[in-house]
Image (cartoon, rainbow, N blue to C red; front, side, top):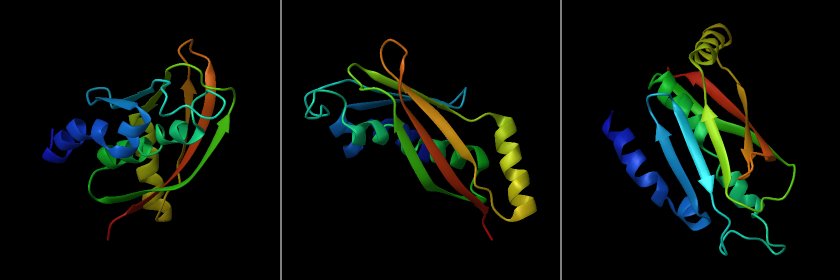
Length: 148
């Protein structure tokens, strides 16, 4: 594990937007997955007593970009380009999301970058409550280009 990865693994749970929203991150380097959870607390509860929408989005924001950066390596530029969130039902318990990109998708992105000069992959993550019911879907569009 590189030094940057070690520091990220230690400090990511102390990143102020995550810490303030009660967001907890677990990195599974072996399986290339990120697990994110957020308990319902007084500091991320909205006016009507459910999870604040901004906190739900925050728990999904950087992880596809992080995974692609690690999987593609330092020869690629990887940026978040666009995101949308569809709130399905109110979050009233601990929420969970799991981020994963398979090797075939990474190879397809590399191929598209080689052929077209860039790739704009889209990923969707389901945010689920403690009962496993989907409370939101987040679509992330990522920009990928090879460094010159």
